[in-house]
Length: 154
Length: 154
DNA sequence: TATTGTTATACTCTATAACTATA
DNA sequence: TATAGTTATAGAGTATAACAATA
Image 1 (cartoon, rainbow over the protein chains, first blue to last red):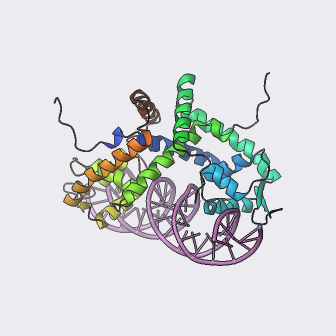
Image 2: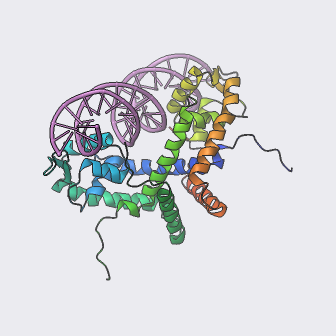
Image 3: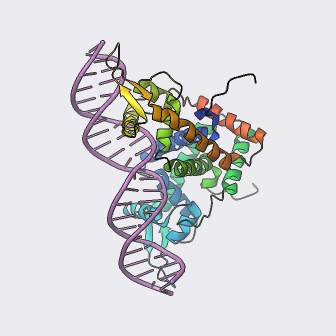
């Protein structure tokens, strides 16, 4: 053998470590931008998911976003308090509610989307188009592989 | 123009979205594994950084890990309570303390490292070696570009 | 009984800012 | 005054589990 090897892998040897480092930085930068509009990252995700969609039940949102019903419930409360969405009782089945954007919410989302674009550009704009695309696809493939979308949750 | 384009980018159009999704999943899986040993991810990061290192001052750790001094202080408290590290008063300059692993801590780290390896394998083991390497380097390059290591903090 | 949604509880992670002790 | 460390405060993000209403 040529070199002595450390018994334990260094932090930097794990892809997960770098992923977390970069992801935290990106999200944090975005959080700062959103802060000016009085919205958090998790709230943005919910709002964006609801744009141009028919009214959704909380459980559907939870499924799409990979969150628990409890988490969605709390987020919905906050968004309602901010008058960005509204909650209506179910029609057929009273257990199902429906959530939809208010006009104020619908108007806000594109503004937030612009901030998201801006953040994206600041974080990844320096990469070549091909590299950006490759990363994008790699992440999507990982998400698919681990079934990170439409999880039943709970 | 060929297609109507949505005014707002979808969540899935942003690399940051996927990064966060995958990163959260990876960290969460790891957290579950660590949980059995009574350690959190943030604590693991600190422990790993300290292995085979001369005693470090909290502020140095903060710098290396990109955390605030306050955050390190709290993590150190927890690790001390778990008897995994110990804190000594400074020598020359009394303002600087030194943190080091206890024997118990030093013995635990390699076990945790094995869990980290296992998690890494579960999350990324299905990828080809080349792809894994490419991702690794892309993330490191991003971290470098955004100066995510050895930030002054505070 | 099974499902939807709410609520209570509990942590981690992290930041900011004020404060103390040392230099 | 400047730096190291602590502490107080705060809030995001999330989970689990117990519970109520509806089916």
